[in-house]
Length: 146
Image (cartoon, rainbow, N blue to C red; front, top):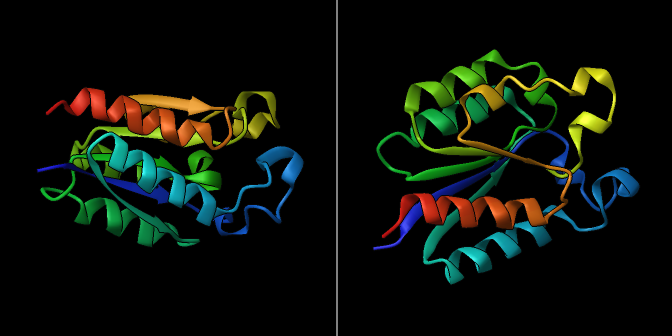
């Protein structure tokens, strides 16, 4: 039975392809989700993708994953820098989680250099665009094994 991985995307990522393409690229969230599902199939992972602009909904999805999901890939977007609640939810469920950012948050505005999520993630990938999601799935597949 394939391992189940939840790919969560936070606020404004539904605007990919429109929002600041020089920073975030021209791919849409739909493109990234399709790539994640194809990559999951290649890696023998069951991949489910979700996006919300609401912090509480992300917390509920993380909590609801307990006992049902083997790994999480999360791009918390702007909530990376503000949400203790998302950090605490990830810590509480103890599901291996990899944080992904399309842009290099360390090369941007100073307020983006810190992420609450990073401290509870098993890994962080930033600055590699959509390829970061693929790399996160590869790392989770390796970590989760058969």
